[in-house]
Amino acid sequence: MPVIALASVKGGVGKTSALLSLASDLALSGSSVSVLDADPNGHASRIGIKMAKRLNGSAFSATGGITEANILAAIKQARTEVDYVLVDLPGVSSKLTLLGLARSDLVIIPVQASEMDIHDALQTVENVKQAAEAADRTIAACFLLSRWPVTIESRAAKETRKRLSAKAPDVPVLQTPLMDRTALKEMTFNGAPPRLTDPDGNAAANVSSICQEVLVQLGANVERAA
Image (cartoon, rainbow, N blue to C red; front, side):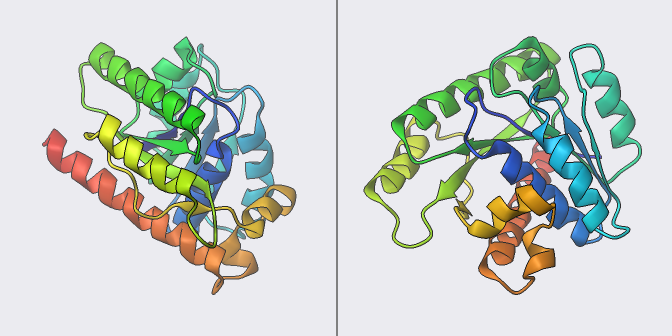
């Protein structure tokens, strides 16, 4: 089953919030999902355990303590048990990151509206290419605009879109940004994703739209591999 990694050489870009949002949306849509937390801060597993309790029987699990020693075995095992495996990789370049990238079918790279984030997102793309070369396989990647302004798109946000497309034309930018909404921050406290707290709200619609784009990227990657 597909392995989706959330990766960035820079911490604090909304990587874990994006991962948990996507994982919960997939689970609430009827898929079984396993979250593997390889980030030493352990946020994805800690919040993911609270989220699993909220999902009331949906096939959702979160496992922490993923290290260099066990990441390959953990991914191999999880992909035989669930429909989707989502891996939260460390916010640094490391051997652990490269091992996780090498086993991924799609890498989502969150990018905030800043020059620093663009720089680090492009470095993450290079890490994906290195992992693909080492694994001798195709690894698809895409950019996810993260913590995006809810109202008017700022000049910095527009410039971020423009530079990503210019500097990495082979890496698609998802059309739907992950908006900077209160519901996503509240999710970290109570483990309840937007589709549970306000299923008809803007945050739930935002996450579902991103999830659909991610599935399209996965499908395109399968076609390329074939």
